[in-house]
Length: 76
Length: 247
Ligand SMILES: NC(=O)c1ccc[n+]([C@@H]2O[C@H](COP(=O)([O-])OP(=O)(O)OC[C@H]3O[C@@H](n4cnc5c(N)ncnc54)[C@H](OP(=O)(O)O)[C@@H]3O)[C@@H](O)[C@H]2O)c1
Image 1 (cartoon, helix red, strand yellow):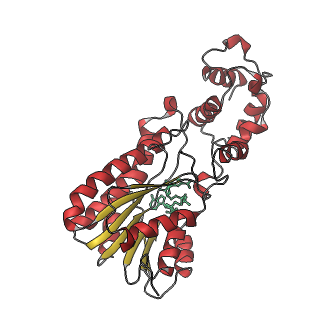
Image 2 (cartoon, each protein chain N blue to C red):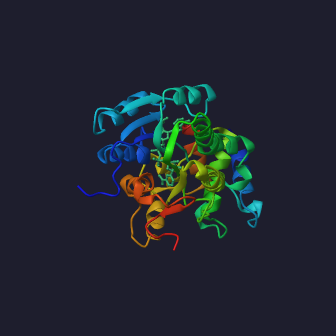
Image 3 (tube, rainbow over the protein chains, first blue to last red):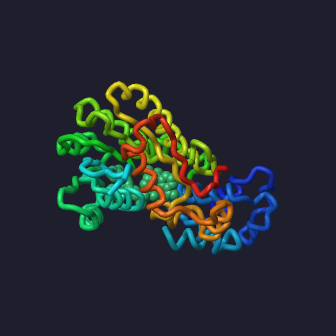
């Protein structure tokens, strides 16, 4: 699993936020477009792409995209 | 003692009885005098339910309800019943773009096809007595509430409510009543550890006018009403039990 792909998949869940905004250090909850539906989409994306089942509390525990990436890695 | 809600002497089959709402319903029905037949897949937890029941005429049958052979075997074990509670089910959170056919199948197999096929077999084989009562455990989800990411689950429950109404009309000549209970959020393992965080649950709970989620017995008592002769003139009805959240 590459962080670059992970960021891309992460960014795909957004419609109005420019892809250039997303980096490993992006504090995703601060993004204007962030919503509970996007949180659910991230969980579903991780299941589909990485076969990892995240919990709502895992999303809560992460601040940046790389935080979440690391959580996913520990569950693989 | 005078009690129009009594289930004394009624034989009642309850699916999903190894946990949550089904388990509590089995316990409460046995306390109301019913002979209960309980079913689920997990032997240990089902035995535990059996040990919690009142009376000596209760029994358990293990069955994977999505498997036709096991469904038929369950029906073979039943002589006749006066009440049926179709409670086995599972949840899923999946935003629409991720809701593949596979996910719909997974949920519909358990939540829709299994209970409907079980009811069909029991009707076809005439195992439901005259004046018996069928209760589907549906949900407010998909019927009166449409929360984000709940579409696959909700569609399975909407299909249940629709089928319930068709059955209510078609089975009325046999004097079989068919209804649903439609719970809001109930504290069982179905809602634990999923895509919704504890923090989100706490916020959600605040939306309930009665300021709490339901407990399994809140639903069991509604089911008992629909199973009892107190509801003899009630059929085709969706009984919402939700702490007022859909007002
Ligand atoms: N909790 C809620 O907030 C809520 C709200 C609205 C509606 N409901 C509905 O209430 C019903 C009961 O849910 P619950 O909250 O009590 O959940 P639960 O504690 O998870 O219980 C589900 C039951 O279904 C059985 N089951 C699941 N898949 C099965 C299968 N393939 N074959 C046979 N049995 C199966 C399980 O037994 P085994 O694992 O032993 O097989 C268990 O006894 C469900 O239909 C659910 O949709 C729940």
